[in-house]
Image 1 (tube, helix red, strand yellow):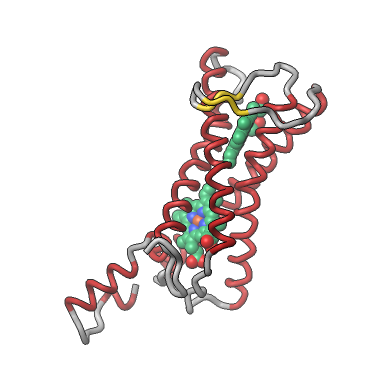
Image 2: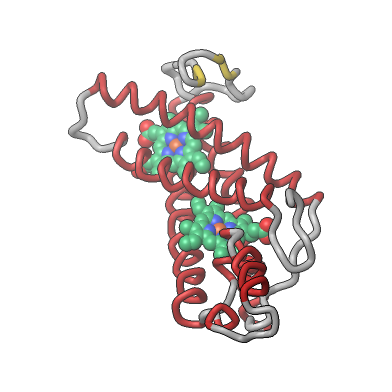
Length: 205
Ligand code: HEM
Ligand code: HEM
């Protein structure tokens, strides 16, 4: 089941969600580490190149995900959600979608406006053209600030988003997290197979 259904996320959404999540968490850590002052310049240069390569990969996947999201049906919210939670979570998801695109674009703008003019060579192989922007120190420092600010806003939102998912799983014991892990239906199916009429602990998950 690649595509979403009315009551479940398909594998397309699940694979994109977790791949992008891993990339973004890694990029935030890498971005923070590589910009520390006391780092060896050679190591720093190489970390910047990895950051740009994985950052452009995250951007490509985020754009694919946006198209996928626009073309998909959206599963109905889990029934245990209050109207306020529904509104809050859909706003948070919308903002996450926007920031996963805005942050790498701002990073691309940093590389494009830098007066150093260092090329962005994806994984040392594919040359990514710079955005058509004028190079200047003022523009570079504006985009550097904007990229950092947006990236740390994204980090804060991801922490809230992950905390909400864990709260639903461990406290509310509903299927918000398992639905995005793609294991809920399988558990229910195997449960139905083992206990065709029964109610057991899986029903309470
Ligand atoms: C950088 C990291 C992340 C980003 C950008 C992100 C983004 C998103 C977006 C945009 C959605 C909405 C999906 C849709 O409607 O198609 C979503 C759903 C979800 N995410 Fe994340 N996410 C991230 C990390 C995480 C983490 C770490 C967890 C869990 C610990 C998590 C758990 C979930 C769950 C459970 C849902 C489904 C919510 C529902 O059913 O309404 N996400 N995420
Ligand atoms: C979702 C993707 C990305 C995330 C989450 C991210 C995150 C970050 C973070 C947290 C920093 C450190 C900010 C600071 O503390 O000053 C950083 C710096 C940087 N990022 Fe990204 N980034 C992403 C994509 C990109 C892309 C696509 C590029 C370029 C093609 C890029 C280029 C840079 C550069 C050049 C810096 C260093 C700026 C400076 O010299 O202070 N980033 N990024």
